Image 1: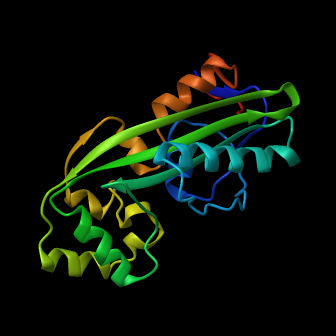
Image 2 (image 1 turned 90 degrees about the vertical axis):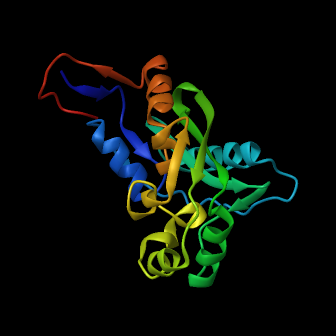
Length: 205
């Protein structure tokens, strides 16, 4: 049995984590980063921010590909009301990880699915809670000297070496990686974007 899409499918993101999560489902899709401005607005809530950015990503790509299903997503890490983006450099990564050490924080992902030709737009927001154990200085020094922290919100990858710091996760694990797969898939099924064709070697797309 194969999972197929009812129209071409586009991921409006260059995130290798999102690409890997969708490939694990067996989907065939194109990757087209949107170039959307992800600047934070001072008056935005975390949920409001990821909702706005995910929609901006999806609609920007859908404008040029109106008959495709387009998925946009945005993930942020929040602690004490502060949004932690991607570290600019080693010192920024150290600062973020010091903040997270021994603490609880939240990971928000907003996702938007658009097919412009039939006027479909669906959105969702998922929040997960992550508890870090205290990070020792030697561990911190080692981690910031890897390549891992620098293209991830909050400066860590829970599915890679950064998983050493996560003591507990409440909610969607894949959301912490960058895409709440269960929730996204549920919406894709409901709107008819994906279906099972009953043929194990069916062509996707």
